[in-house]
Length: 255
Image (cartoon, rainbow, N blue to C red):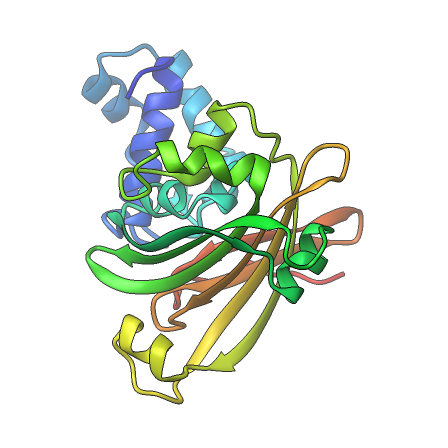
């Protein structure tokens, strides 16, 4: 990983926390030990630890050694949109199988979400997303033609679609998420290797440009034994949505 030393130290500690190498309640390596490991002065080490404190991953201080408080990784906006970035940040190996990408007439639900006429050309993408080789999520995404046509020049099995589109100048500035539960039909069950009728988590996401123009609509279905969602809120802050592993310590807090 490139970048300033304090960012590399923080990233390594995040990886060790998310993988369970440093479990919740464990002491974080001392400043002197980290200085020795990285061949660094105390300045960047302290900056890295301060970053993890601000993220809520570690606690302690005032003469007490820091300890791991949470395994739930903080997620900036672009990381939540990208399954690949999220999985890598959690220390997991992301994967994907593109099952279909095609230009189609917009169906009614997607047309409403994208604010286009029903039957107008759109690009639909069907992918199976994997965690450490295990099917974890079915992604059914519809893009406006202007954005989606760029994907015909991209191998969707080789990386993050959102990172690619952002790199091509597509404005993906904000999103709305609706999360509910559904049961797996036979098609979903076969793809996710679960029994038909099993409970699935569904996230329906609409993504917009900075000026509010819809770019993408997705219906994503997750295995709840592999992926969970956490909402953090406080009296004077907007709620923050995070995707995580089931069994992670809960971070949600109410007013």
